Length: 457
Ligand SMILES: *[C@@H]1O[C@H](CO)[C@@H](O)[C@H](O)[C@H]1NC(C)=O
Image 1 (tube, protein in one colour):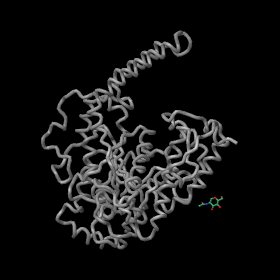
Image 2 (cartoon, rainbow, N blue to C red):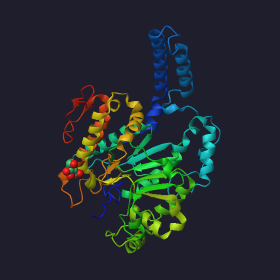
Image 3 (cartoon, rainbow, N blue to C red):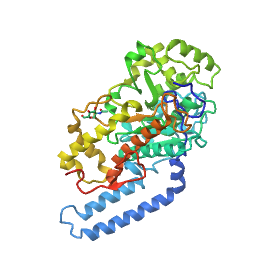
Image 4 (cartoon, helix red, strand yellow):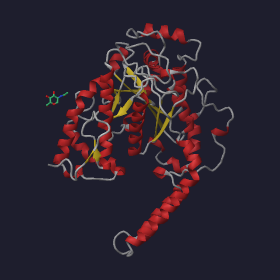
């Protein structure tokens, strides 16, 4: 591994920083709010008109009145909201937001009783309470200036599109940020203040899911097994033996993690962040981490080593709430994955040749149902390495798409080809519902229409 460069938002694991334009959902909602509600009303009236036109006889099956009733009550409650929540449900009662001492920042006033504050907020916003237990906000980010690599911003756009696709298919919100929220917490430290701010901004979300900008969802169907994590507050990919026996700084990967929006996590992040460049002890932490983790070569204190260190040294305090996931590609090393995509594609096509209902055309919005239907045919596929299941997340550790300063271990071309291949592999799963596919994973600009009943012979 090369020593981390101090660009923004780099991850220590990937030693990659990315950058790219942000998407400020909140802002666009604010400015477009009125327009949006107006549009929803027009859409509703259109649906009414259409439904009475198409089905004038209420006795034939599904009745128009039923349809009207269900559509109108839903629309009335939702005010145009997605996923059945009411985007205008804000009664104005005092909440934790009215406390002038509340700080969004790491190192600012610490938040106390957060679990109670969140619960209280949900009580005042009942339309968010249902489903709050497993609501996920995906958070990612990259630097605020253009990439040095001439194709860096393009790659980041494609990585971002990939995340948006995954979130849309599963009904998750996403926040992409491209500014340092703490000016001194650069590179791989930048995500901690961001995740903390996201927790405060999203009391309706139970989980914040950090996904590095250089990581791509390569199984659009797979969902996090949240049930497995119900007694845990932090989930990272890693190998227990490498943590506790080898004390290796790469025994986990801090580039993708799932963290519960709760007091434990706020406390944990304060401790974790205390090894960062914003503290007077930063240099000393670098030495401490290097002496604790024999394979760590670069002198700077990094977030990933810090996390391994806390697992090693403060296991009693934090360890029982940290789930080290090693059973599937919670994130996977691209070099291990990229050569398997061809065979995996063949396997999935083989299944669809056999099973007519799996190759039916369908609306994108019911994707999860088809994923569940496919699952029995994947029962022998396994998970993770040596499996022929689509890898869930492929992480381009060491490729540095934005800076272009990839690890000298790899040729630049190898990284770029692999990224194209993985992104198009994922995009094929998305485009399928739009009637197209990339026949050649290395040709991003060409798609062919999918014949009806593809891939039957
Ligand atoms: C792909 O499958 C073929 C045929 O089963 C096998 O020989 C080959 O080793 C596989 N390739 C990879 C990378 O797994």
